[in-house]
Image (cartoon, rainbow, N blue to C red; front, side):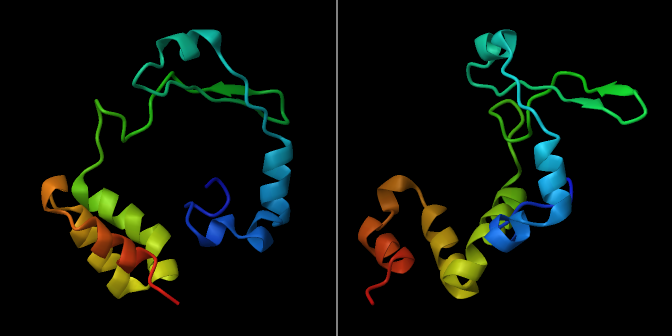
Length: 123
């Protein structure tokens, strides 16, 4: 995300993950679990980020939870865009559109067999 500005199927390809800048940032990153955040993260995902710059400067974010948690849900349009970012190249746009339309129905009206055939068509 920090290098390419987004995370999608393309950004997760092995060749992209070998990008020198992605590798540099990966090696410079340490994830540290916070007992406090773990304790308060029931139904939420609390985090903060601290950057230690080469000039000695330290930049620290405020504690935050990502958009999409129950108290800050993503709008339908954004969920749709994210879904298509990950599925269009794999399923093809028409199948992705059909899949999205099927899962948007109430569970009682969903034809699970048809949905599975759409996602996993026979060879």
